[in-house]
Length: 113
Length: 117
Image: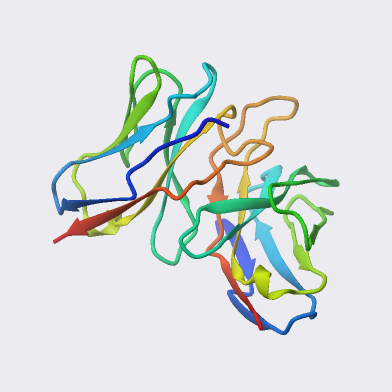
């Protein structure tokens, strides 16, 4: 599995955009980039995933660098409910995958009112 | 839809006792898995299953047994609990295309908090 580097924590203000970076310089050319988040005392939940081009959904946007060595999860307008640990996970599978996704320590996002 | 349901939510065991953590999903997902999460750590894969009758080991399988007799259920058994198994356990499921790498997003349960004294 590709190794990832994420900031331990980030802080942002409510209603402002948040850019969460992830470095995955050893990613394989066919690995997908998944993002999950874990709200306090809950199980992780899917946020978004992509392969090469930028992706948007109702929760967030994913910007993937042209060389695919890094990506950025963008929350367009943070709310208090977005306070969570965000995990960036490269995987050869488009989803859960046979041998699972490897969750590192992630980035603890703090949202200030 | 209930999604992924885990029981019990909390459990305290004494060293050497056995118990089963239950996991059920109502989404007809082929793939199911168990993770554990220790304080300040990411999730580590214990066991997984790509369909009824098929199970395999993950990163930290020692001390745990699983079986998959139906698509819906994937119980995790601790045969002789140890304090090192104190953790929060998460069950997850996803769609898995047969004979393909194509799969869907993982859906997680709310977790089962286990303390072994």
